[in-house]
Image (cartoon, rainbow over all chains, first blue to last red):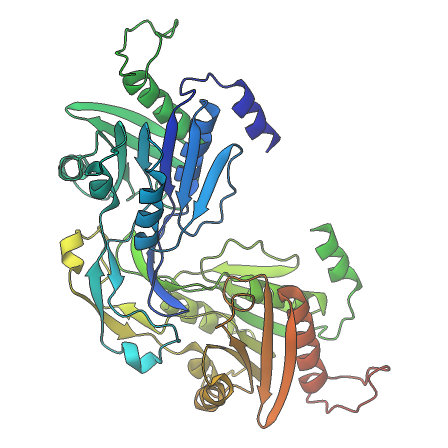
Length: 244
Length: 244
């Protein structure tokens, strides 16, 4: 925590004054008070992204599904459970003009059609569970009147991952799509480390396996330099466009 | 952790030499590498029970589904994911003669019929999820050649909880059933505190709301006094039967 506070104080303020909204963690789609559908996301990567954005000087709101992770210093956290609640919290947050939206949460694609306030007897679930498709948060944000300037979507994939991720980005209207290959144990959901491919149109940037906080800092620096650059960094030397 | 070590050293050794097997946490029933069915159990109560048993001098094996809880000192922990894996680990543990089996885990009643090693496209899950009934661990242990001397089952209920729990105990062959009412936020799944009703045949003992470790210590003391008493405790005064 002291180390986190030092990073917060000492990191370059590349995103000073920017308003950033991040979703993180899994969603929990309740079937009854005990049971539900979910996924294996821990929230670690999304919380690390919130930390990296706060370190870079941004105002950060983190909308998190159920997660055991500690809220990083300087981050405003809102807890939600289901995909529907996450969408509602996201739409409320968009009332504040937002520079960057990072959709890192692993939002359940479906929810049970039946949601009981009483625990269901085993026999009530005997053969199948009827599902309803959840709203797509990235698509909804993309069509919003106050669309954030830059939308970053995450895709967790196990096969043909770049091709299917490019399709997802195009469909949903994300400017950047960050692809995790979750078929390896050392990266992705629940792991301590991660690796990703950053797709921006036809450009591809790879971040090799590293800790989730290092990946977050690399990714946020990449986004800041390519989409929010206010000045040319000296040791870097390339001129990046300012969209501000 | 230092406090836990002190409790371990200083608590009365009411279960010295006893072999205890405990299941804890939720199970995760995988649909693909990201998605699955689960429940809201945190593992906190089961881990507290393992701690209380170790404090009481027992040899404790803890079979845990996915949980963020730290393993209590002096406890042998085995990690599993699904109900099927939990059953297999339980049967392996029963090869060592077991005095007490505490089935605290919130085992999923069903698993998806389809379990894919690749992440399924959203459309593959469009309307319903076909379910298969999981094996019942308590019933299986009850019918085992090396049945533990005492079987304690947990029931999480929201309605008519004592009546339905008594039926469950009878069906499954548990000697003791411990009932949590999970309809209140301050007790049961994921909460820091808990309360329970202990049913042993026609006897009913209530433990009012307290921390999960206090509930564990009360419950283990109750079980030790009523089922494993080697001596009469002085301040207690009642003569309890020894089944040893």
